[in-house]
Length: 260
Length: 260
Figure 1 (tube, rainbow over the protein chains, first blue to last red):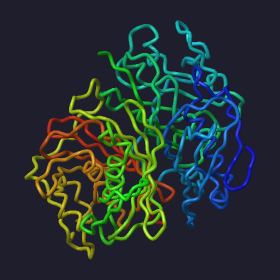
Figure 2: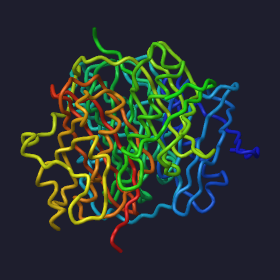
Figure 3: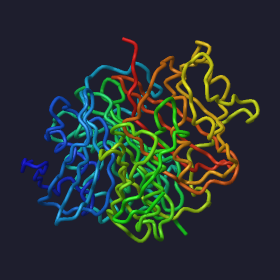
Figure 4: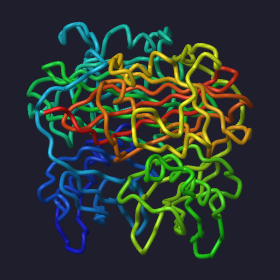
């Protein structure tokens, strides 16, 4: 990422972070959040703590500009607007709150980590899902091991519970951090697959909160839908670190094609 | 609301929609969403379907400007940025997605409406909560009847379950609509009260989805926290209409003061 001054950062969008021929939404938000952290607002506020993104037009892999405008710098938070621009058009625009995270556990928590079978008993998501002509390059950089029963849609028998849960690691062995957690919060496949719906589920808006610094090791991710109707679906994601603490959460509203 | 052209709308922020001396966050988002609907992007996309707001500096009651910029107008959605400006400073900035809602029930749903005692057995939230010097003018325009046990914090015995649920009606007898639901999604008191925490809980970011048009009659609102730590709390709100259908949902990240 190149600081061009005046709040503009040059970025190269890497096709490796794609699902089919679309760049992954969480990756795009991570690019914007990185620019926010490197902007003047990031001084003293090194971590992304909240991101809301609105997805306007899919960007292409290659050069893009992240345009960061400071809205407010306070004592404990800094707030910016960050837009991803390509060919002069805003493709994704976000509001990002920066702050200082630590690895202290919660003072109070309502939610236990999702229970998963051991990592080695889960199914490693492939870059070329069998029975499809889709390629998911993202699955070569994120190792995602999905609960086997949550993949029963692949055999024509979706559970229809509306939940897909997984273990996730970064394939290069690096530890999770607040930026990469933005990728984990927008998991593939979408939970609509577990409802018997195939096809693309483009995100309209996504909001993510990073709650604390993750411990080294794999993370556990639970993705669930609440309500599907009117060609819209919500997806709610929770992510726990290897010590069982909630480190990140997100909601998104996505478009979905329902059987007529 | 006055259309001043060039995407600027004059608004008068009404102190009636306040908690203490602060204007209510959901009300401020409703003002922005109304401006979005009245902007050119609202033509053919009459309803707000998603709003993400970042709260920068509290505005004062009185004149303000809602500045709307169209980001994209598509077939089924229109996306705008809308900023609330006072004294030349952005106080709240939002991304708003507009579309066309109907009152069709869900194709699939994971969540039953919250179970509440009958409306008349719940406790009408007062404008002057006993034992405090706080006034809540909002409670004169929103009739909120809270589940009695969720108010046990008022007697020094919070349940610590992290849930506050209520019936809500608009005091003037009008029916709920997508704009007023934005107010319902940010209920008072904050759920931190049920965790034994008193004091102000300023919203940092809030994201709301309006899922369908509400039926006439009261709504049921469930507000819950997931995780509290690092001086931050999330609050998750679900709203069901009188026919038991989910009509709106929201998450917010708020600042909270924890005992040291």
